[in-house]
Image (spheres, rainbow, N blue to C red):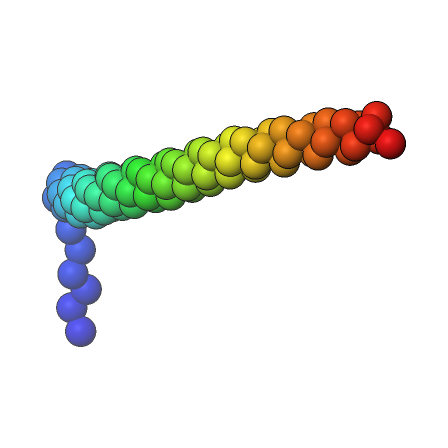
Length: 105
């Protein structure tokens, strides 16, 4: 069996070609990985933006609902206040009538 050997220059040449090819492959994988990471970041930013937008909409809707409820409660309080004033006027009239009858006796 014949032993095959390469000269030092050829060995160095093929070694450099192998290293360059390996670096190119690694660089390609890194570029692909970087693209995937950037895509994922963009997707997560979009998801986060939608989440915060939805969260903002939900909070805004809740705030509007609370404001509407406050307005309804205020309206009911005004109605109750008016009714109490009417009742108080009637009570004053009744007291006036009672007072008049007591003076007659």
